Image (tube, rainbow, N blue to C red; front, side, top):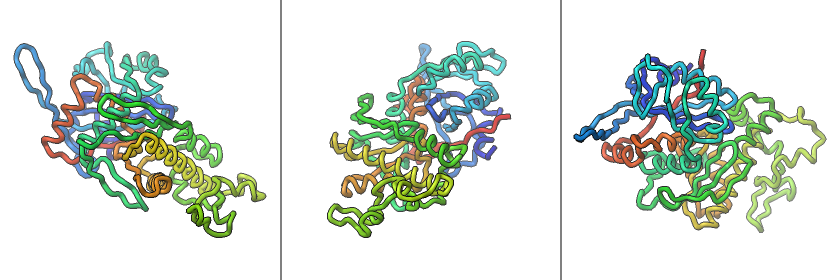
Length: 387
């Protein structure tokens, strides 16, 4: 268990609010905890939330703590159940109950397909009822919150260089949100609570992981990504230069441009075992990233949208993935558009579900961030090791 995970897993911490996003590949948790033991650096911050309680008089209650982000693989949902059980989650009406209070009438906000699929499991194992919130509503709410409330959330990533982008809240809308999970959803966001899913593709993170597992025998998404670091896609992909022997300058294609992903496999007398897993994973990652970038730009062009934000756990802060998406958007737009990425890319749905609470609203938290001039960041944790 790493330092961050250990910090979140401390039994002395009370989880005051919790929301969950259960996708096809990953389970994402966002916890608002009373934890105050972090030595805060570029990966953490303290939050102060003002809560109004009305019982005839107007009182204000201040909570101090941290937003913590945690993920598990969906196929290892039992680890998530064990973690929640170990935290002795007792939440009712937004308030923590005493530790001896039995699990009853415990409800947490949940989104994603798994909120329906695993609702009975959470009820049986933990006594927790999943209060289901629409997935698209949560994705948009989470993105809007981050783009409005967090100063250093959006950035470009070109040729390995990250550059933060300041978003003018008055000029935020409309934009295209591209959420890359197991599949891909492309959402045109016009303003708060007004959006439309305009496109998508089934070729997403699940495709990368699924094909990668079959072709390379990797046992995890992260292992597959790590493998791609050492790969050379040119061994597998057919390039323009392989066909023409030079650039195809008339239509603006360099000799190094990919003419056909995995195309060399048809012209070489080789079997799967003759190719390095590193090269296969690199080619696969590039193929899927390029495809998503092209579809995203064409939809932005279709609706006249100037900004394209990419989120979802497919990206994982991976340099090559972001650079490839950026190159794709740059190429297809002829330099008129840029890909924008989000620091908390994989937790949009879970964060949006948390924002769905009546007592923890986007407007309130945004106001507190702005008033305090707080810069970011939330605490992010890796999956837990549960005994």
